[in-house]
Image (cartoon, rainbow, N blue to C red; front, top):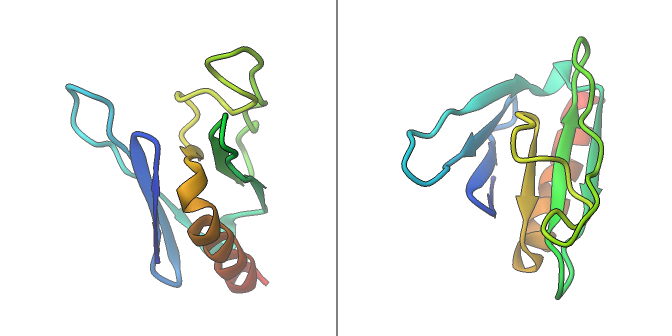
Length: 106
């Protein structure tokens, strides 16, 4: 199960969540999280004007809050390794991904 985000993607194989961010001019640096280690998820759907996001909460790390401003639009910063901004066209896939991860956690 894959979700295409803004400058990256999230994939889930039933056990592992892989967040791959692809910044221009650098190599992708994937972050892998085991679904059983995730303590919570945050999902904000994208709209016509602003991107949404998917964020995973893990023990031992502080969740990055939403930033305000025109460019951020209420999303966590790009530097947060446990989140990814998503466009409106990926809302359905992201919702299914979050539901699958929640089911695997429980």
